[in-house]
Length: 350
Ligand SMILES: Cc1cc2nc3c(=O)[nH]c(=O)nc-3n(C[C@H](O)[C@H](O)[C@H](O)COP(=O)(O)OP(=O)(O)OC[C@H]3O[C@@H](n4cnc5c(N)ncnc54)[C@H](O)[C@@H]3O)c2cc1C
Image 1 (cartoon, rainbow, N blue to C red):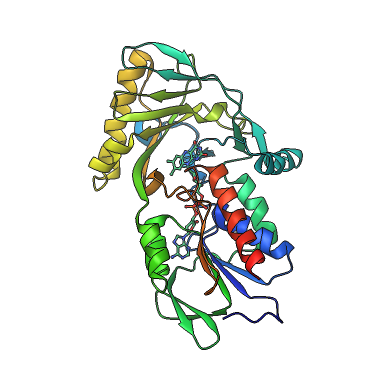
Image 2: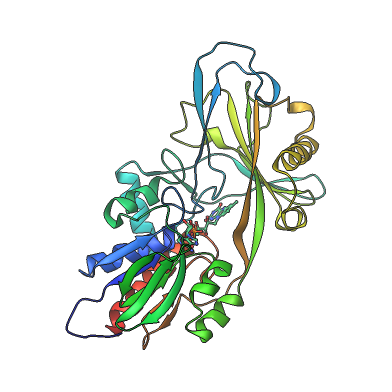
């Protein structure tokens, strides 16, 4: 699989932050890179949900007003990112300079079990106009092929052969970077049992995300809160983030805790939305009226509850590796650094 006289052809599976960071670094090295993603667009869990609703809507989306439509946007996956590592911080500054990210200065608190409110300081950033802003920018150079689910990575005559779920040949590559959540990475790493075994040791929890729009501002003094002792672990006034000024009314995102979400992962989305709205009311008191839009999204793999505590996985002999937030830190920043680390390992090994 290794031919030192030619630039290695690389396939990157997954166009989330890790895969795109990996692909960008390899392209900068002059290596030919093809990125595949099963989704409709890049970004993975740095996701923005767009919903078009009538501008005058009654409870739960029933129309009672003018016919004009408005588009709502919700960051229903990653909420914000930190930038502690200087390499990631430099990229965040680049994104800020071109308007793809901005600091989020909203008031964030921690609601403790005994009802106390503790300020939660820290520098936080968000994508512009939605969380997918930075990954869309990375996709401009890495040009992922969307809507393709890679189902097989097998050793061929002259490299790694990739196939989709219908068995369609996706080409042959000298190196493969698997940049997908760990449970989805395991079957793609099957040709290297050691890597598959290590990926399988990571644990990722599901998360139910509820998206709610209220026609009037809610009387809640903070823009985001970590919650304990509730089915919810996080609530946020999504429309308080920079670049969301076109929103009508207020939009909120509520995240079920890992424990609650796992226990209800197979429930119907409508039931989940109502139950988490009730939990929101229990936290916020009488301040929460009926939302004019309410929906829930299930993330089967949201954040790693047990990572593998290594930058990335790479088998230099075979040119097969894996990266993602489950390797390093469980966050957007960790995903970026893991993708970069895998690219550097590949380049270093030649
Ligand atoms: C609800 C929720 C809240 C979060 N909150 C935060 C937060 O506040 N701050 C923070 O820093 N992080 C947060 N995170 C985590 C953050 O989103 C991730 O750490 C980061 O986005 C992971 O990037 P990644 O590239 O490793 O994986 P992903 O973003 O999951 O990208 C993997 C990509 O691979 C694709 N894929 C999967 N299988 C295949 C296949 N077989 N073939 C082709 N493509 C495939 C997927 O479509 C996806 O686009 C949150 C995540 C969720 C879900």
